[in-house]
Image (tube, rainbow, N blue to C red; front, side, top):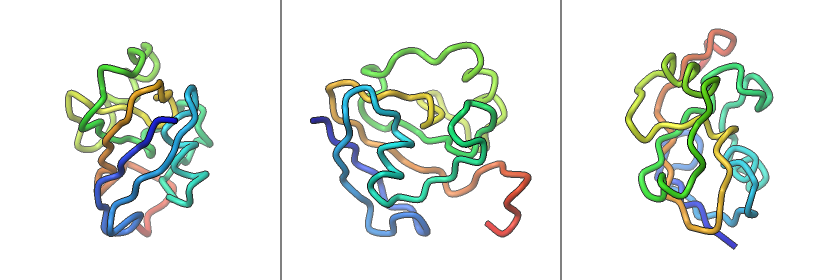
Length: 112
């Protein structure tokens, strides 16, 4: 079972976290299932950028983003070459190291 290592995030996981993920499960779903409250304003339907993450290790093990995900990623705050939408990134058999950006573009949730 692959592991996802989440680097420390001052609100979501200040100490960082290591979770188990199922093959074929999205990074977002695995995080939520393990108590990491990553934002997902569109309910994981690839319609926003609030679940944006940066894959620090293991990016090459993920399937390529499709055109819709790429279009949304272009709108993400702090976009990096290894950025993905966690709701669209399905875990394979390899471990991942993931960073949750400090900020998201979320027009609905202004209290962050």
